[in-house]
Image (cartoon, rainbow, N blue to C red; front, side, top):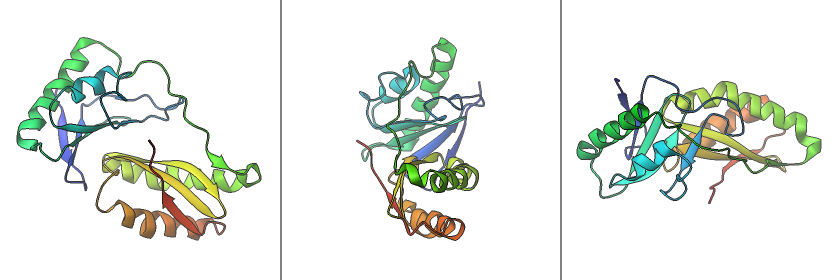
Length: 191
C-alpha cells in the first residue's frame, strides 16, 4: 500500500492519501468525521489507532484522505512515519473506518428560509467544499438566522491561521453575491 502525504495551509496538519475510500459519501455523516480527542474517536478504529500515537491532537476523516494535526510538542519528522504505519496497519486489519452512525444535530434555520438555505448549501457543496477538501478539511453548514450563515470548519481548516480570512473574504463574499439575503458568515465551534 502506498500512502501519499501533502502539506496543508495549517502547518500543524498533514494530509494523508491512502489511495482508497476513507469515508463513504452520503448517509448521516456526509462523508466526513472530525475527532478532537481519543475519547471522541472511540467509534472509529482508524482514528483511535492514530490517536494512540504520542503527539496527535486531532484526526479528520474525509472522503479519500485523513488529516492529522499534531500537538505543540510533536515534530512531523518523527510523527509522520508513525501515522503512515498506523494507517497501513488499519487497512491491513480489515476493520471498518467507523462503526455505527452519527446522527448530526439539526441545522438551525427558520423553515420559511428553506429555499435560501438550499441555495446556500448548494453553493457550499459545489464551490467551497471541493476546494476546502483539497486543503485537507471540510466546511459544514450549521445554520442561517437573520441573514447570518453559521459554518463549522473541520480537519486542516480548523485552527488554520488563514481560515478566518477564507471565511470572511472568500465564502462570505461569494454567498453574498449569489444569495442577497446573506449579510454575513460566522464560524461556529462544536464541543
